[in-house]
Image (cartoon, rainbow, N blue to C red):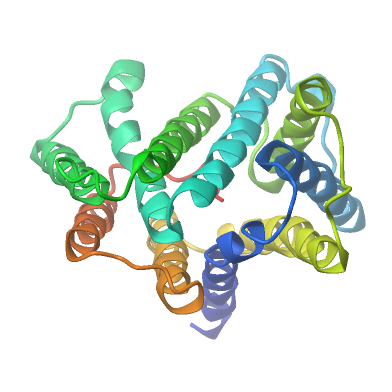
Length: 298
């Protein structure tokens, strides 16, 4: 029993740390695209070093068609980060995070099309109640929060779509798993994001000060490199369903940070909407229907 405790604590700790990322992102004075590029590049180097030190080898020759899937999913991961970071800039962290956690519902709807899985009563209830949750968070019929709020939700939902795409794509990848897969996806994300950033805006760190560099280092090294290493090192020793349940530490911590650290207001309908989304997707997880064998979300 004791040997099982440490891996669970490692996964829970990585999720708690992930939940604080918005606090750092909000105070880094560079664009979401540049931030995502830095995150992918630094994390690739750190995880690559971890693989070397732990003597875990990746045979590119054995990947076959998986290499293309890794490149595509890695590119989607980079876009997913950009959209999520943009969501943080336009609305509250709690609303952006809860919108992002609509991803499992998107996966539920996509699985019957891609894998011929049948939707049961549990999945339909999860879809309907989570959609109601999004309606409550959005505040349809009440535009007093302004277009910025709606734009932030749109970015959050778009990020959820790209995350769902990453998860579903990973279901087709058979030749590589775990942290090796994530390393290759990070490299792919960096390769795709570099020309995008150079063409669209260029690399500029003129606005960065000592605080900005420190926070950027934490996001790249701790929130990405260290946390991914912790997560995948422990994942093999924890049942998939338990790991999925522990992943809900991420949105809960994010919402708490939004309210108590950033001092952002959250309305009663938004709280109810968040409970509906997280509650019913967790309920569906307990039914064992959503596989989280792909990447972690942040």
